[in-house]
Image 1: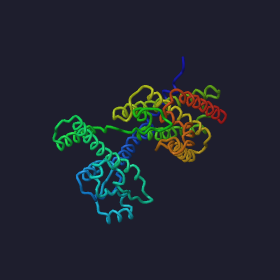
Image 2 (image 1 turned 60 degrees about the horizontal axis):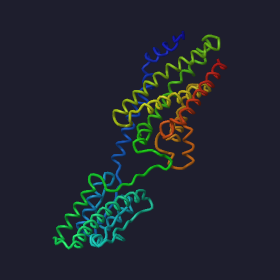
Image 3 (image 1 turned 135 degrees about the horizontal axis):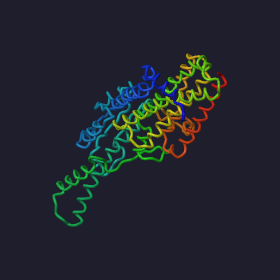
Image 4 (image 1 turned 120 degrees about the horizontal axis):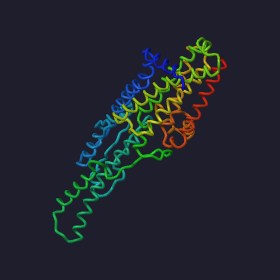
Length: 384
């Protein structure tokens, strides 16, 4: 029968130290929820300031302005030409859109060219996005007009006597109503290197919460592995002199710590699922448990090389920051270049932030973690 007395001792020791529980639970879970909420709140409050000049003052131009104003991420200023130019030069707005005179008349006659001018500055970062929004609303007006014209034309061809004005208005409003509650046409932008649906992307790391959790969990694993540095200079010398004695102590001690990290992971999985951050699927839970296993292997291996506790904290924090940035814990750095995409595949975050992890990456990361565990134990045994 396997003697697990060391495991029980380590569990009781962790439970008796509030700081250990704080590092295991609050750092990865609490800070993820706090920082994630702040990031999410900042994203919701983020608005693109634009100015719009209505030179047409028609029903269609006013309708276009109203619809643009209702966009959640846009803050619209209705100004004159002189004020708009001044705001653009002062960078008070990202860009200026001018609805030219004759806007409604051109749309009614099927002309869409040169009906809206755009003023931009070299510092404009969202002009293309806003241009697409305005283009989509203009396309909506154009399609409504074309549909109404087509209906009137059909009645004429059938030689049916109608009130053209009433029929045209009825057809126009009916077509326009078909854009609610969702547009008739949408464009889905997918990352070229991913082949997954929107739901899968949300589950596998599209949420800022899950990305932040990978960073804080790795940080927690490193901080809670400092016991190796504290004990290897003194306690390891007093443990059983045989090789198996030290190995058993290391395995059971790290195993007890991994149990707490696993419990934190399951708690995070439950909370994230309840607040609709992720979908509560078993394969995701498995990957979330594998992740701290890999992180602990990295932290134990790193601790086996370090002699001073202060140096370990500094190096660990810098290491976790760098890995977090390159691995995508803070933002999808893989989108910047194909080189970063290939590089990110070697970081533990790739377990949760990519699509094909179950088939390929999981066995590789688990195997690599086991190798690191073995190397760390071998080094600690030689240094005892």
